[in-house]
Length: 73
Image (tube, rainbow, N blue to C red):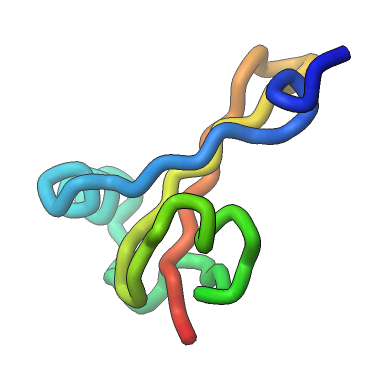
């Protein structure tokens, strides 16, 4: 089994995607769950503080689940 099949996919959202996300879930920016700037996946993406990361995981029940995290120090 390859590592890419075991680990979730990460990507940085654009400003437009972040705005859509906040409207869709009726939350404010600072209420998003956090992920540390020192997290290995965040480092690999070269993400910056205040970026919003989308994490896509495989799920047996849903097929695919998406999670969102705000990058913090």
